[in-house]
Image (tube, rainbow, N blue to C red; front, top):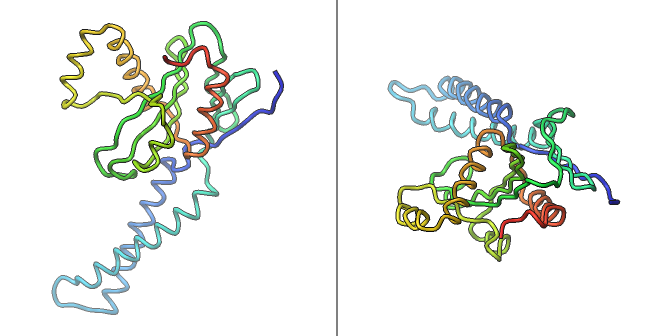
Length: 222
């Protein structure tokens, strides 16, 4: 099979970068407070200095994050070979490799973010995992509610039922062995994503899932 090897960088907001950004916020806030307290002395709690220091910390950490994102990479990449092989690499060393073969499963799922953190509340975590013999290559991205219908118009990414409010749905699943088995596989894939998965930006994830659909068509969920 002809074609070029495709490679995508993963985890743009990796843990070391987030730690550096947090450290810059703390340091800039502390320094800003010291300077502003000297400029704007107060007998009691110096509210102006506190607010000003927090603003300085935010600006410095925001600017540093934007600067580092395009320059400080996680070292994790995914390679897509013309023969359908998927390789997960760390600093050029292959960590995992999966090829189209008997026993391969493709799982696609999503769930809504319910608590605001790094990703806004209401966005969807959307994932695609290729699994064989209990080994997963699980890649994911985050998509806004506005963009979700365009991204997944056919509902190929199954909604993962994980919350207590889904008790009724879970009871229904127990009455359908096929659906119950699918839900179990998706939960296992989600655990793998949480432990070893890697984040992609939306554009790269779209290209990746399109590639998986072409090279793993016979293993796609029905």
